[in-house]
Image (cartoon, rainbow, N blue to C red; front, side, top):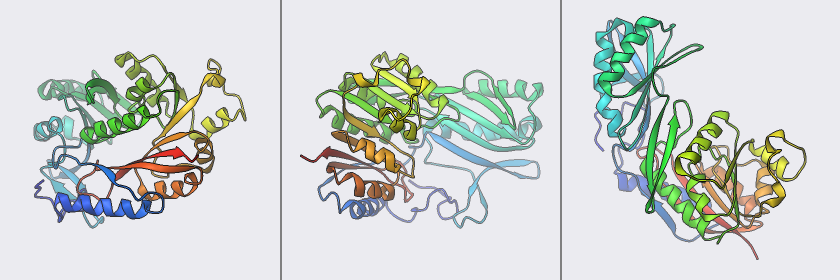
Length: 371
């Protein structure tokens, strides 16, 4: 990837390394962290070197009457104006310049605009959220509707305690996992995997590991909008998937219907509450329609935030034969493996490069109970 803002924009910190060298540097780091628990080969999934990011957030920089996109600078002590971002997928890139032109021609659209967020899909859909330090009235709505039509995108306006949805507040991504296509509604403001190409590889890898269990039931924590849950459900009799966010649970249930999957129960529980429920330490009204005793979990999938798993969750999943652990932070994965390796061994590991040109790397491990 070539970008004229390399070295000044803080979004890409490994700009001076070839992509091959970036990957090797990340792989070395993960191998070293996991060496006490795994010395085998790693499955590795590379990203496209450009146009790979389906989410992007830009500040809006005002200078006189002109607006420009901006990002934090590399030294993290200021802002740099940008006029390109080759890492965003085409559905975003092709709308960035026309959007900025429209903003600069319209005092109504530009007044107290401080940020723009894009959410797009590999099929060309795009959702644009415009962030303001003022209340949005009818003149803004009228101009935003015209802008929406011009850009062939959905536009949302946000200010403090106000959200103006002109048409849709989601895009529908289509991912092919192995030979089957899956649809996902990605809502504005909700969590989505930023790199759809590597995300499809992550799901396929997790599904292959899950299929090796040969059936039984699946437990999933941090299920989000059903990103892993829905494809993996084909490998199991029943699935119990938990997530703390109400909006994510709503999206997960919609995605279930979109894909015609009927063997999943999505429940709004935190990881701590999930542990309490499965240990029957306390009752939950949200589980009143579910008979926990009818589940026979052969596999658990966890995809926790950067902080990793809490101690109670580690202890709980340590009682399940197979663990598929997807991690966005190799350091906390290594910490959790120091506990989980007492009962399980790592049989397989993978590296997923969702964020080229940064130090960030995601990985996955399959743990199997020791005999």
